[in-house]
Length: 130
Image (tube, rainbow, N blue to C red):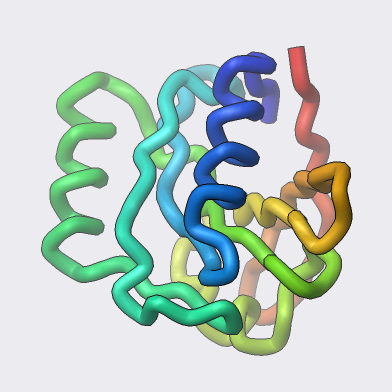
């Protein structure tokens, strides 16, 4: 997925604003490029996991579709660990056609990585910042 520097910076800012809890949200895309970030509320309010309210999730998905885009990625942050999918992340990966972007803010420099998770199989995806 290609992502503009401005949108990439929005992901990092959201992660830092929600720390020490994880942040979460969705990324709309078109033709393999991120076009809009949809921050969501982490209703779990936890530094260890995230949860998007079903109603808010539906509103975001409707807005993405109404905009003529597709769900490119679901994102969240890891505030204390590397930006690699945890077993919980893998178990809750219900959208095999979208990427899972994890914003790692455990260190001073944020580390943002993308993953494809299909039927429990994890592979790293390319995230190209433009």
